[in-house]
Length: 216
Ligand code: SAH
Image (cartoon, rainbow, N blue to C red; front, side, top):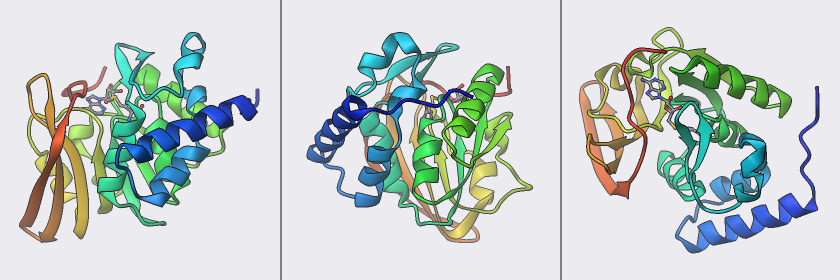
């Protein structure tokens, strides 16, 4: 197994990126320090390696993108993850967000509907020594046998709040999702306040790839 190189240049560029994100308003030290540890360049195709530490989204193959670092930081901060939280992520993509959550000490369950991405990210996170539970399937269904979860994070644009996922969230838990069918989505934080009770708040506009039904 080839070790992922993480040299001084990578570390220096990463620190600059973290400073940039914190200047843009991310204040949660747990998020910033996790992002300072995960080697983002390992999640990109080698042709894009020089772009790994720019605050931009990037193509990762299969028509999908690795989210912009600021967006990852924003969603993670809103999710407010504590160590040992059971966290369900919908849309594994490159596995970068899952690695950040694992770095923060969460027990991560992540679902991806595209088989090649599922296989690739699983192999990469193993190589990087992150223990994350990977699932190939339709995230709209959640993971009923592994729930309930303390936190649920959707990293694709959801046309509506998925009922199945709300059911799999613990009372007192939080779900973060980009909501909307158009070209941009509203970031929503849903707090589950009772068995059949939620409180939602809106947190600005973002752009995500759509959350699709079924699997490929
Ligand atoms: N979190 C990722 C970025 C995700 S991009 C990262 O850190 O890189 C959104 C991902 O959601 C894509 O990989 C897409 O294939 C996946 N996706 C879309 N609809 C889905 C669904 N219904 N279930 C699971 N994954 C889905």
